[in-house]
Image 1 (cartoon, one colour):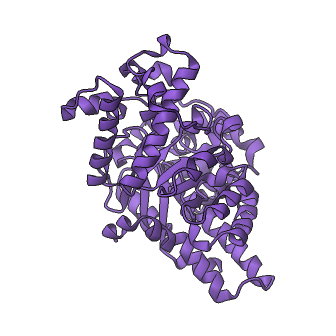
Image 2 (cartoon, rainbow, N blue to C red):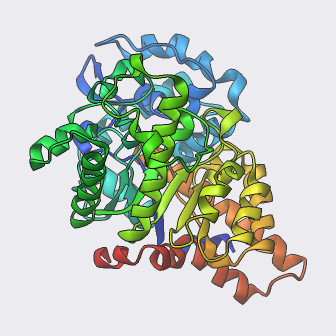
Amino acid sequence: MKEYLDSVPAIDLHEHLRAFDQLPGYVETDQGRGMNLYGLWAGSYLQRLTRLTPWEPKEQFEKWWRQGKKDFVNLRAAGFYRYMWRALRDLYGVDFDTITDEQASELNRRIFENYRDPRWLHEVLLKKANIKLLVCDRYWERFDFHADYPFEMLTFNVTSLPWGFHPSEFDKKFHPFMIMGPLDDPYIFAQKCGIPVNSLDDYLAVLDALFVTAKKGDAICLKTTLAYERTLWFDNVPKERAAKAFGHPRSELTPEQVKDFEDFIMWRLTELSAKHDMPFQIHTGDARIAGSNPLLLTNLIDANPQTKFELFHGGYPWVGEAGAIAMTHPDRVWINAVWLPTISFTMAKRALHEWLEVIPSNRITWGGDDTSAEGIYGETELTRRCLAEVLAEKVDRGELSEQDARYIGNNILYDNALELYPRLKTRL
């Protein structure tokens, strides 16, 4: 089964791939600026579990490695380690569990050399990972709707739009964990387009103009990561109540007034998603864990039957709840297993087993959610392996024929993306 799934060209519905010269992980070494072993690990999800030994500018690798190699000792079983372990093994032939000092130096040299040439990215993603197309979430420049690669299309990241009650809100001090720049500010966009923003109605016109611009560009869907900032429960707030917050800085508003405005805009974005036929990808689970359960979205989903919702990360750790939502909304909810096999391979297998039992197989999608060639490869490989094991187990138990299992695998890796996002066909 794994061999068959490896042969299926995949459509990856979520990455954070920057232009080659802007990839995170570049550092100043004794040989100049470039990517190295530290940079790959620093750009990986391992940093969620531990703090890596810092890299000093123009440092020699061997000096960093003497201390840095100790950073991995307690993480050998962690998913955020294993996906990069697999990438380094497959792409470089190195077992990072048992790597010697000499092997580490040679691996570092090869990484540095590979990232001198953009063809490395194409070699890994298109050939070794067998990715046909990917969708990139440009959270660092949300309103730049022009893809950097011919195999790429984009999300329209709308995370910042519910904060539009006042221009001052787009100062990073209010949202320290978010990247904020000129291409994340709807007021700057409005100014460039000659749209006055003196009222809530004006701001709603800006939102519609953003949707038109995004769709004319390379964006095929919406994406929000508001779960990192607040609860996913959005009340259906009357326009008159939301309007009370417009034009006032946060310092003049109560937390309830801020939430009212955010909730109102989230409902409008959901309506615009249907109007412009751009499915809505929503980060669920993880993040601010107390408020990220996908069940909190059910009122929004129930009230918007024309909007297509894609629940990201399978709602981890609430994978059963995500399945129940999709089962009870079969005409409008998809589950994206993006990142899930990397977080926990065990839970990802459980989730896929459950979802295939409660929803049609054409309602499950996938993505990687990484920033480097190696990271994307590792996440893609884990996804194929996880899916292969689940399908093989169902075949072994007599729950599926081999033919049907292959059909489902092809669906999840490729066909479902084209069904949900038909504009992807323009890049094939």
